[in-house]
Length: 282
Length: 188
Image 1 (cartoon, one colour):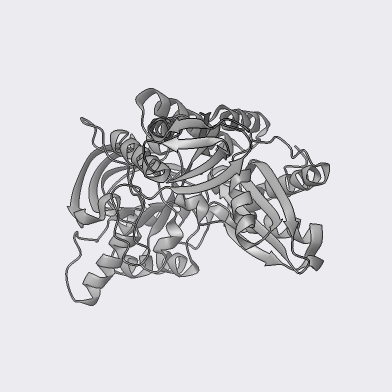
Image 2 (image 1 turned 45 degrees about the vertical axis):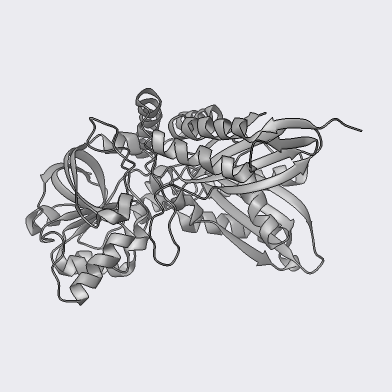
């Protein structure tokens, strides 16, 4: 029998605290690299200017610890828990929330959670949104995703018909992202979840935005779809900040799972050019 | 495409010379408001009460800044998505508001109001908030402090770079730009 490994939730709290601060001020390298590649290829002078402003923003944020975006997001956490882990020193979710609350207070990050009906701001950016997956092993992998409201609002789940098929999926994603245009702060990263069920499509789509930007799916069928969607979106002319150009999206990432014979669920989650996510393994 | 330096409050003369695609460096006083503040302002109007500031000639910046560090006037302060203010903007424009600053598309009703009452929608670069926020020299909450980041603030800005997105002639920079660059990616 595998040995149970104790992991203190205090270590989880500290990890969340650090990841939240790092995410707010430091753009992931792969996102910046993708933006620099796009800059080289870009032909529109306005688009080049916008990208230069984005690069300057990345620099200023890192140097002065100013948040990359004033919308420092909801704290979305993907937690992969090895089944041989035993959490000690308190309740895991409370610890995660403490880490988020402290980071958003100490880091001068914006508190963006509110009552959906009264719109009253809770003032602490809580609760964090936690997706937990039990996996083999005795490690805990934490992915912290600071998800802004602008790009999130340009996301959706649509239950397609099985007859819509591959081409229907491609067309729906392309039309949706082009229609969103300047709203989600392009250049964007498009996460797509195909199959599963209603909620799995959404979770896959968001998870897909966290993949290294532009890395193709290991499934050649999906990789081909990613390429087609990527080209069609970048042919839209929307461009950085919607001000025209060849750079509307930096990457299209698809995840897929089996679905019911009667369904074809499709999730589309858009991440803005400030795609802030950081991870650690405990 | 021309470049202008303008100072608020703006006049009809300021607005009519602007065309979609022009760059404006804006200075002077701006007021911040997002959805929650707009809902309250429109409610105040419905109840026959005064707005928290004189709207004539003013520009509203759609922003909910991050908290200021000690010694700084404001935190990061980039534009929020403007379509959420579609239900409110035409009414405020009819009362004399001359400009909105945000990112993303607004409605045809907003475009019509810009034409009818001589106003402009200015686009800023979303997600470049540390840089955009550095144009803000002073900030003070003047209404609805309980809304936190959504409170109405009076800002003093210096040379804030903006793109004229909807002008007073019905032009739309987003549509113009998209048309110009559509289909060119595969050729590049």
